[in-house]
Image (cartoon, rainbow, N blue to C red; front, side, top):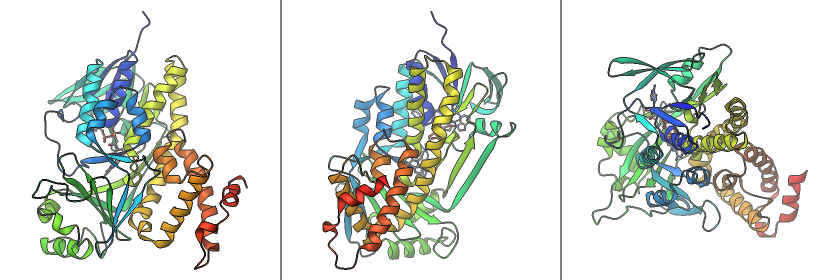
Length: 445
Ligand SMILES: Cc1cc2nc3c(=O)[nH]c(=O)nc-3n(C[C@H](O)[C@H](O)[C@H](O)COP(=O)(O)OP(=O)(O)OC[C@H]3O[C@@H](n4cnc5c(N)ncnc54)[C@H](O)[C@@H]3O)c2cc1C
């Protein structure tokens, strides 16, 4: 029988657990070491991004480990965003074509499903094992478990231990290692809308709700228990900032003034506000991802801000691409690992940039008339020329065959064309009589 490697994964988060299922499915023996207790037994800590948006790239990667059916039970489709203005007026903007939607899913529920599946396939999980370093020459992971130091010898190690990865920190000490971290001025705080007294959702459940307020915003995603997880994105410093929301009265006044229709849906606002932590938002870039027989994957390699809803999905796509390369190269890891990092690095960089850009779109542009008109024109272009003009959001969210780097490149071209189209439109012009064929034709210029 062909020898199959023994693989160690550090981190049983979303990406480490999916990777364990993929590799175990290929016949490797996988051991996963996780710093925290088993989340299937302990209750998940409040304030750590309780739900997430899952879209087509994520589904494609998850479908490969056979959990599609169970996953369908866990999600709430959101075909568009519901914009709430300061007067409480609503405006629903579809994300794509009829039938297309992103999905709200519980972080803990999805993570538990992935761990269960990986275990079913034979992976072994070791909780409360904290990685403290890696010897890249000898492929040894150093761990702490209940005050005991352990050395784990493996043939391959994957660092799936998230944005503040211990595996990557060890790599950063190796020669000529490239690394950067960039915080945005905003932080986030998680709050909630509980179900109504009648036990219903407080708002339309099939939508991602946004209260865009230019420099800050509130968003809400539905949960299966009929509550919403609500996230406030706000600068740390300045006039409207976390620094200034330092008393219950200040929080009360701010929410009543800025989000008047959301405030009555939050009976525990001030308690939650002061109990839940304020998180920071970072973009981490690193390279190489492979040192010796150790490889970074997911946020450990490329943490991004959450505004495209693609951080976890990019990590899932890492697993999908790695698996495909293993198929194409008969599990020859010497060939696969260098190819993996070369292929994925430009895509990770592209989605990192797109996620930063999308923050401006979410907190500001979605409430802008010109932006909405441009969206309408692009939707018509897509309807008339479905293969030639796919709006950037759709390329990223609904077209997994288009790489992130390709989407960003085409998106830039489209942006230039649309800026010219919008500048040429005079007040009173009928956008429906634009020469759509000529606009699409400019993609060839
Ligand atoms: C507010 C917010 C909203 C988000 N929304 C979305 C969204 O809608 N859609 C989306 O796709 N992405 C979203 N993301 C991004 C997403 O959360 C991450 O991309 C995803 O969690 C990355 O998964 P991971 O497994 O790589 O890392 P993590 O989820 O961070 O998992 C890492 C695991 O490693 C463990 N670990 C850490 N250090 C060690 C150690 N030294 N030893 C052992 N174990 C260790 C941790 O305990 C953890 O279990 C959001 C992020 C934030 C902050």
